Image 1 (cartoon, rainbow, N blue to C red):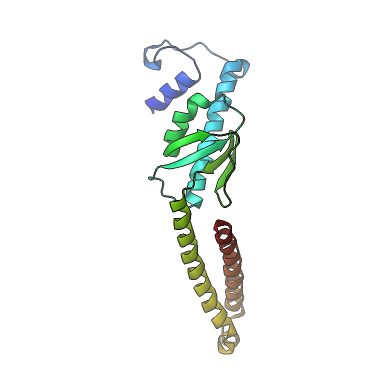
Image 2 (image 1 turned 30 degrees about the vertical axis):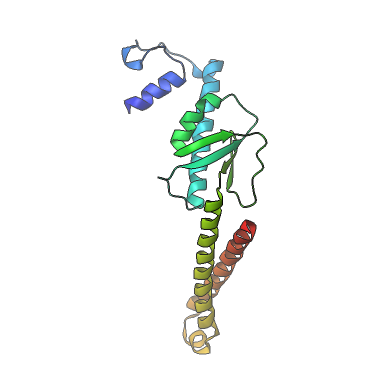
Length: 190
């Protein structure tokens, strides 16, 4: 992990040269140094923003190896020199800072310490997302119909243990809740 140590060394400003050529630092109370505290806050904010961006990508079923665009709506321009780091960690082709970004309905968003992070959704991506949602709605609806058919079968309800029947009722409720969420997400894209 020497590259991480070198990165932390330079971000915290503990030396001007590489850590491998520097003498060991004297003891330093990091909380007493305002600049170090501010840098630590910035590193922590970047970390949390990257984590949120990766979660957004996962929730949107976008592959992590595909470069996508992100838009960060924020008032804080102090970290603008860290945009390349943010882009690299998010595997983004571009991270745009935009105070007045007005996101279209259905755009994935996450609240981060740096501001609101949006996935830049292209028209082709919206068409792909509609198609994905349609397939998912059809799959869940089919499963819900199968469970409902079992529950309407009196022979199944009378012969199956009560716990199994209750499990099927719970599954049906879960499927219906999933369908409602998927249909709402699909409606937003129209």
